Each structure stands twice: as structure tokens, then as C-alpha cells.
Image 1 (spheres, rainbow, N blue to C red):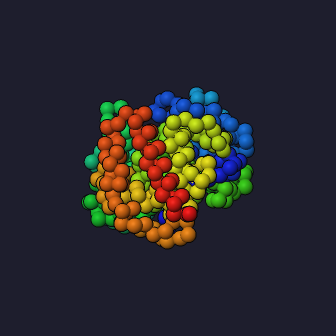
Image 2 (image 1 turned 90 degrees about the vertical axis):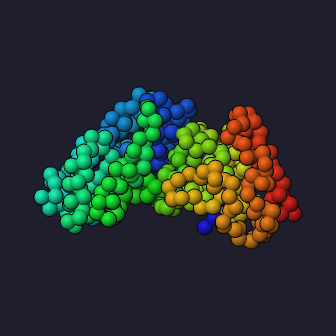
Length: 396
């Protein structure tokens, strides 16, 4: 189903009971806090919202992450940090009988979680493990990967913490867990039966259960919101699991990617930063003005949200379906859209000119990556105002 922007007049901290926050790019960038994040989180908690932090990182202990967040002035308990190791171990424990033999290829945090969930860690394939669980592990050796492959080939069920192909490091981009598991997959021809991390929705489901395990009522999906900076992990996981989501522009996603996002990567809400949690209609920065135009384009409301209606902004700007798990590239942005809009009284079937590639209709977008920030914002504003005019005409 195609998803489009619509709005809310209530602060998100009042509209939802539980926020499932990504960490890197949302709350912090490496060792440094993201601007406005800590104050916004504290304000949301004061309004009654429960916060949990979700991360595909499988190597950092929960208490280590919690201590980092406390350093930003946040009141965080370790249980509020939901790592892919926590989720993966619970996933395996639900799939196997108590005390089942598990071969672990991963960091100490993953081993601790496997033990905590009543499973028995074995050393290698000679112990006939019932399952293999693999996470990101920088000290991984060829022999470790070979032993995992031997066990999987012998019939052990194969689980992984996440499929992230890359991870950012100080010197550049490094292989992630998804790259490491390719060795086992290639050797055995066996794909993992399940992955705990985003973009799978399992992490959000488990986060709600873990919150309930702390003595709270189980928060329903419709009262939970996933928040992140990556469309291909945080937002896609929300869409797969039928969670509403908020994409913030404090991390890797930029306005161009939002404009060009295929339906499976479109968030429910968009905002420049986490201040949106507590404010239904804040003051207009330049970026906010651009996003506000996109919101008005959709339904004439304040805060951007998607519905099944089809305004021209996505007709004009939607690229072909991007490769799974990858953001749109420049090549995608220049190609002809594959999907068409369903006719409705709000959005008639677009003409051929409306289906033209976005850079053919708006040549000023062709060199958008080379423009300075002020010019980019002005370009986005002009394009969106043009699309608003089209929408107004279609409704008249």
C-alpha cells in the first residue's frame, strides 16, 4: 500500500505511550549527543511517554550504553536498552527447548544473553549444537566461521543478530555482521532462519514485551512509535511490523531521500529532530518550512504523516523500488517511477508528464547534491510549492 503524509495536532509524546528510539544518529553520534535529543527525551518522559532504546549493535552491553546515555543527563536503566543480542537470544530461546545446545559466534554480550535465557553454550560442531547464533564480532577468525559452517551444515538451526552489511568506523566504512554471515551462507548454502535486528520488526515486538516484563501493561502496537534516522532499518522495521514511525533528520537520511523514498521506506511522520515529540507546531526553521510544505501538500496539516491517498509529491518524485535494504541512489532518482497512483477524488490518475522523471520535470534537482544548503532549501521549497499548486488544481 502506498503511504503518504498526513498530520497530527497533538504532540507525539501525548499521542503515543511508548517510543522505540534508535541510538546512533538519533540520540548520539559516536560519543557525542545529538542536539536537542536529551532535553526532548526528558520532556517526553515527563509527559508520560515510556522510552526504550533499540540498536542493532550486538557487542555493547546494555549497562555500557545506559551509562553513556546517563552522561547526557538521561535517566536510563539497562533494561531500557534493547540490543540485537538481547533480542536474538530471546528469539532462539523461544524456538528451542530449555537448555538447548547453542554454538555462539559473537561478542561476550551475546554469550551472556544466551546463557541468561536458559540455553547451554557449547564449544563447537563436535558438541552437536541444536542452533548456531552469529553476531558482529571483530575478533572473529577463519576457524570460528568454519566451525559455525560445519555446525549449520550438520543441521543446526542458523540465527543471526542482524544483517547490516557495513558499520561506520573512525577510518571509514567497515564490514558489518551482514558481511560476516555471508561466509557461512556461502559455505553451507543455508540462509539464517531469522534475524533479530532491524529492518525486521522482531526487535520492536520484543521491546514491547520487555517493557511489560518490568511490571508495565503491554503497550499495543498502535500506541507505540518507532523513531530513527535510517529509512532502510528503523523505518522499514516499523512498516514491516505495522508500527507508526518518525524519521528524524539528525542522522543519515536527508530531504532528498525522503522525497524519493519508495513506499516500504516511508515513515509515518518526519521531523528535523526530536523536539517534535513534545511540540505539535514549533517555530519554522528553514528546514521545517520545507517539511511543512510537504505536509501541506499531502493533507494541509501541520506535521507530516502518510496515508493511503496519493498526492503528486510522491507521483513526481517516487523512484523505482530500490534494492532491498538500500537507500535510493542517484540512478534511482533519475529513473522513471514504476508504480502508479490509484485514482481517487483527492488524487486523479497522473498524466504522462506527471510520471516523467523528477529531474525532467524539475531540472533544478539534477545538481541538488552540488548546491549549498541555502540553495538546496530554496530548491526544495520551490518544487514542493509547485506540487502544492498541482494538488490544489486537482481538488478544484
